[in-house]
Image (cartoon, rainbow over all chains, first blue to last red; front, side, top):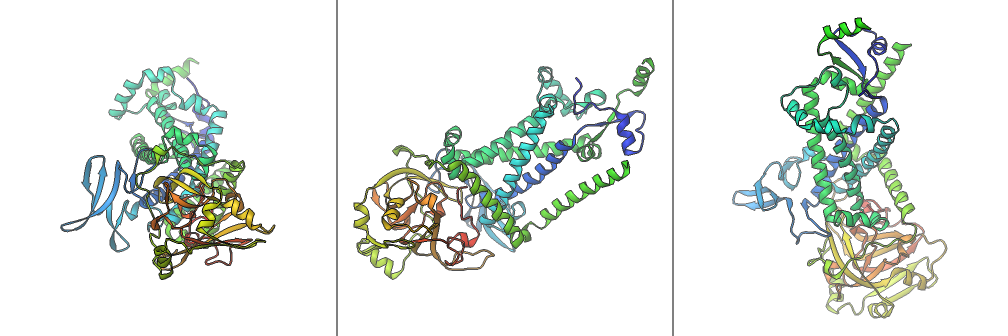
Length: 299
Length: 264
């Protein structure tokens, strides 16, 4: 199925960048400017939101489920420091399990001395512990994320990028087992198949759109001002502390997405992939150049 | 032509990534940069304006059932002002405590706790959202601030209500890491001051306020974060500006970098 986004021909493109493609490859215009621009703004937003979010988290490094939760209530996840026989230890608690994470989580060195802090200084924005400053960065990039996200969604729906390129078709969904095997064997599509997103890509991109929307909604649910505007949102998430926990879990899943995404870029050919997200042009290797040539002769 | 366009585009990409790289590499320095502070203030204004645009109809903060009340309501900030004067008041069960209403009012007042308890009361079960991230739910009883302000007769120039407190949060780090003691104070604008859920509260969960939670009087301003809910209130000052009070930013934590509008 040809798509608006991915279909354009190789020859114009080659003229524009001033060199002809190798005979067994063609350059296609894969990512249009609004998608590329919003992608990179999104990268910057996610980076700052994660870093400042972890700094904010350090102000109360415990997660609860329900409407309320504070020190005396049961936390299902916490980063803390305890005094052991050989001095303070950093303890990460997940449900009934406890792990000694001294030096990284709970108790780590920042600015020359060990201190009780949930996430270490090299992960937080700013690196020094300051809730007020971290909130400033967080809200600055939260607004940018929202505006950028609306721009992306508006454009993608208008240009049918979302419907054609991201939304999986029934055929796509039937091909999930095969696509999983292809990914596990590190076999990347070539030729025509490389011109469109495969089903796992589609599900991953759709998933990350949902996760980012969830981040915004759970973030708003933590705002007492917004709670008065739209209290139903609190009920949907099961209360402010549940919303805060979902905020954290969604952020973790976004980190997981980023890791898989970057690894896939590296495996699929980092130069070609990154170029396509910068200039829009993506080099497709034909599976069987000789066959293509014969097809062309027929025409 | 084609070449020029490519160079421009390449320059734009390089400039964009250069700027982003600069931002990432200099985050710590930029955090404390005055120019950046202006941007952060603009973001805070934008947040306040957009929330207020949605909040104009006196929308109420959610109220909860008695079964939702937190078994332990965490006390934070000052847990005991612990001055000689305050300790004497506490020993006398705050029988001589006065709440003064001053500033841009035609009828300055000085009220005892008994006076305040005789006024019509409102009881509400609400959640208390700390800026740190935790939440506690409690049942508050008090007099609506709007009722007191109406009785005091607000001047047309009035824009803010400032709460002066008995506690001194000494030793809390100020912005930039210095230690700077300071008398606690807070301020809200008239929209929040006249909101039906904004109380001068004297009881928590049916009992008179205890010392850790702000005895004898504290503010409830339910659509904002916990640090706005000033404890140990001694006087209420109606004013047109808080620029000349303490650090000039409208509150103890505001003077230390936190947002004056704490709706998020």
